[in-house]
Length: 87
Image 1: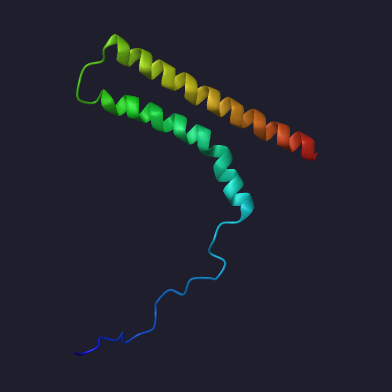
Image 2 (image 1 turned 90 degrees about the horizontal axis):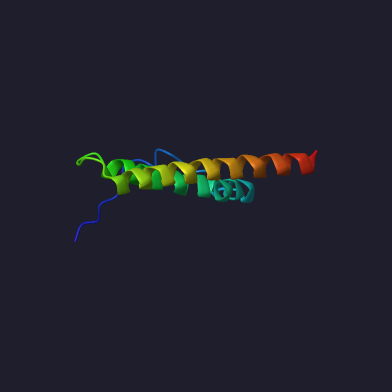
């Protein structure tokens, strides 16, 4: 049995602190409701690509738009509240 060995060392050396910090994870978690609402909206819009829109589809898209707006509003209010408390 022959062993295959690399002729070169690894090209990219990864830094030891590659993991996200707690602050970065908190920021991602804070943005998650907006991301999920946008995914729901995209799902509703993608469903309409291959067929005409029905009344149900129109309601689904309007509901998804409202959820995106509400999630963005809540995220903006939360960010404003946090910065006001810090200041």
